[in-house]
Length: 209
View 1 (cartoon, one colour):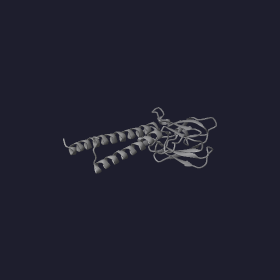
View 2 (tube, one colour; view 1 turned 135 degrees about the vertical axis):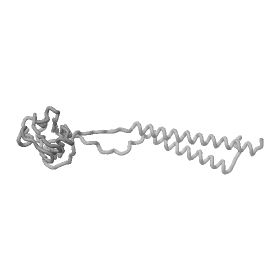
View 3 (cartoon, one colour; view 1 turned 180 degrees about the horizontal axis):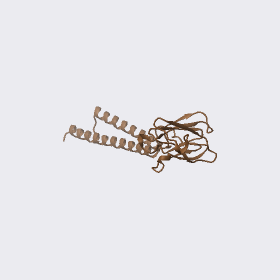
View 4 (cartoon, helix red, strand yellow; view 1 turned 180 degrees about the vertical axis):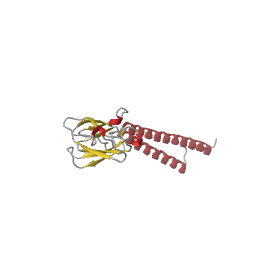
C-alpha cells in the first residue's frame, strides 16, 4: 500500500473517530440538561367552586365577589352550580331559565338574615326572573326549590374568609449548574474536534506516525 493510500485510510479513520466523539459529547450535554429541567419542574393548581365571578368593591371582606347561579338550566331540576364559595360581602345572583321555581332557605349561620325569594315556599317564579342576595356572615347556607325538593333541587352557599388564587407563572424552570457546565463543555469539545478535523483535512499529514 502506498503512502498516499495509507494517509487516506488514516484520514478516514480519524474523521470517523472525530464524528463519533462529537455526537457522544452532544448527546451527553443534552441528556444532562433535560434531566436538570425534569428535576426542577413543579406545577401548582388551585381551583375554586362556583359560577362566574368578578371583584366588586365594598363588603366586610374588603371587596366581595359576584357569582351567578342558574335556576333550572335547560329545564333540569337543579341549581347550577350546586355549590358556590364566596367571601363576606359577595353577591350571588340567581337567574331563572325555566318555570315554576323558588328559593327557600333551609339553614344558615347564626346572625344571618337570608330570607330566600319573596313570598316563601308558596310563591313560584318563571323564566327570566332574577333574584340577588349579598352574604355577609361566615358559614354555610343551604337552600332548596320547594316544589322540586324531593327531586334533589338543592343548593349551598359557602361564605369563607378568603379564597385561594393560582400562583403567578414563575417562567421556565432553572437549569442546574451541573447541566449548564456540561453543556458548555460539550459545545467547546465539539468545536475543538471539528476545528482539528478541518485543519488535518485542509493541510494533510501522516497520521500513522
